[in-house]
Length: 321
Image (tube, rainbow, N blue to C red; front, side):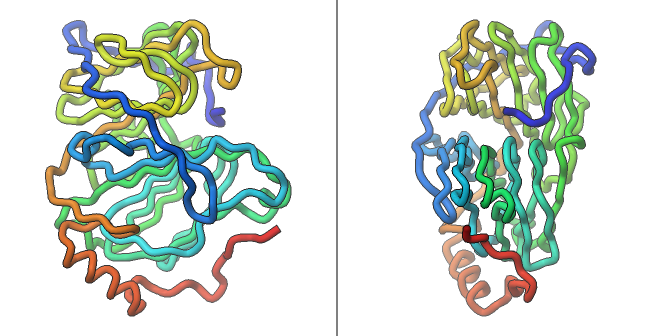
């Protein structure tokens, strides 16, 4: 981990204004573990975090990290969504995607997919047959991003984005690799189109290195540790793998890796995201994220009546070893 790497000494550098105010830490929470889809392990990164602090995001799962034996890899069967966007980032492994609106492709290591469920979509995410048969390492992130109320019924859309399309930059001393996976960070833009102003990054921080990133003051800031340990925030709050830090107001985000990391990962890996809060009502039930209860009931009715589209006749299905 991770698949997409680069020589930090050759990359563009991020500059922080001398008078930038590092954001303090509001809270640190530990993600509980569970299972999703057909039974793959996840950590619920935002469980226990105030929904007002994660807005415009809804939820986030760290999928894996797990080393599957032959025949064990699992995904999700066909299922519906409405009212939001999913952002999937694959660090290790491969995933097939297909949906009821013609979207489809293979998410490769280091790649992302952006799926706007909007008015309603059916889709499947599953490992390919050869990976099911061979087993191997699987690790990724799925993030749910809310849509503004007036855009919840937009036409569904799918964007297949590979790792080579992500912008890669470094810090002033070259101590960290910053992948801009979506949105814009200080003029460096990630691939894809989002309907909500945001930035999604993956930081690899060398042992002992300190990172200070410029951060839009109107964005919130959430730091989730994928691997390793260190500190976060102006007050250097300790944080480790599986924990989420909610950061307060300011102009920059500070992360520092401990000088000694565990044997599982030589570096500290941080998924750092932020966006403009929508400050709108949210009513979520299962795969539907709407503004009111009545809208969720309508989503169920539309799904059951086939208005989300049909599963293609040549649809991929989960492979059984």
